[in-house]
Image (cartoon, rainbow, N blue to C red; front, top):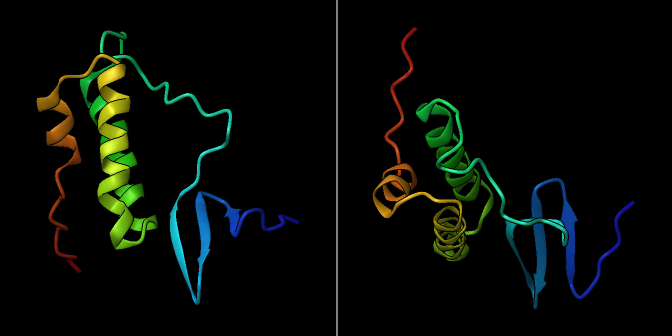
Length: 104
């Protein structure tokens, strides 16, 4: 069982912070997390590399409270720049996607 430390509790991918009388939530990373992802020059299909950025951006949008989304996207931008990606690729992947309508 997890215990609260410094008014924070990590649960799955979510870091819940007690802030006075309300709770904030953002993406949780272990203290040993290094922000290492597939390098741009790795021998993987471009769609896999793009998919990693898109998946982490979607994760941020789904987990973070509205006031923390931009902070998380900025963190991802810096992490992927450090992994060899350029601004154009990162910004294209971080841009919000329109949901396709369900077809039944």
